Image (cartoon, rainbow, N blue to C red; front, top):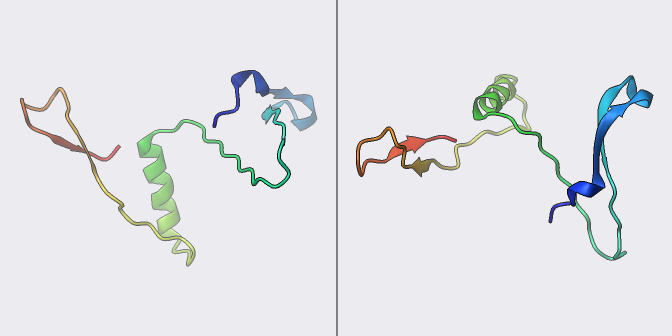
Length: 88
């Protein structure tokens, strides 16, 4: 479930050397529930691959990179009824 945008704040904060800060308001209404939050800023597939390549080169014992699958996308540049393989 997404937090409504009216409850999310993104601003320059003087307490953090005028860097941008994101904060949000959330009400924990059930004591027995487990709450998890995730945030992801937009980035390109190429940028992700460079980041993962860098991690892989470091040979860390707790990092494992595997190809899970390929997506098949019909591109307008492909000939009629042909399918192009896409990694994004």
